[in-house]
Every structure is written in structure tokens, then in C-alpha cells.
Image 1 (tube, rainbow, N blue to C red):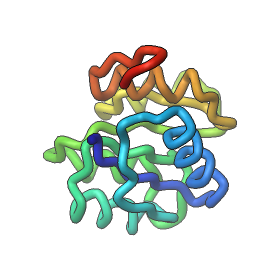
Image 2: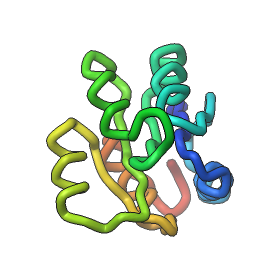
Image 3: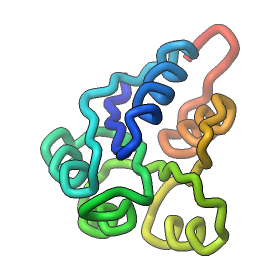
Image 4: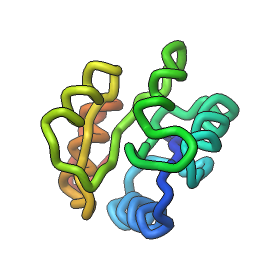
Length: 127
């Protein structure tokens, strides 16, 4: 089971990501959530999840700052954002993010991002 955290200042995003993971039967356990950059950093350092869904624009620290402070962490990061800019994507990848997906979150995009981040292959009947 993949251990993951959701870090986003919008509670709707927490609910949507959790719903999509559960509805698709993905082998991911949400082990924590955070609503700002500082609490996201603390959560990831404490829980050491395999995967973090991390919003770029959050109070206290933005997602880029969080990722910079996690340089030694083995946690794979998938950025989530409403901003569709090449500069954001470029910066995310340069900092070591596995992927960047846009809000509203599409289940296909989410699954593809997880596959790229974790290296698993999902089939119709099996995870």
C-alpha cells in the first residue's frame, strides 16, 4: 500500500483527491492532510510518505518552498495547481517533482501522475 499525504489550502481538493483514489480502488492510503505550507513540511517530515499531493499556492510556504526544504526526502511529489503556466511546470520539474496536474482534477490525469511517480501500472481489474 502506498502511503500518501494531501497538502492543499482548499478542503475541496482534499475531498476530491480522496474520493478519486477510493472510487478508483487505488492502493493508496491517505496518512495525513495539511492546509498550509508549514504544516505540509512538518507532516511530510513526520510521516515520510511515499507520495505527496502538494498544492503550489498555499499560505506560509508555497509548494516550491516545501519541496526545496525536502531535498533529502524520498517522498515523491505531485504538484496540483489551478495555474497552467509553463514556468510553473518547468520550476516544478527542476525542483524534482514527479508531475504537475491542474485543477479541476481529472481522474485520468491523477492516475497517470501516480503511475509516473510511483512506477506502478494499473489495469482495468487490478492495481
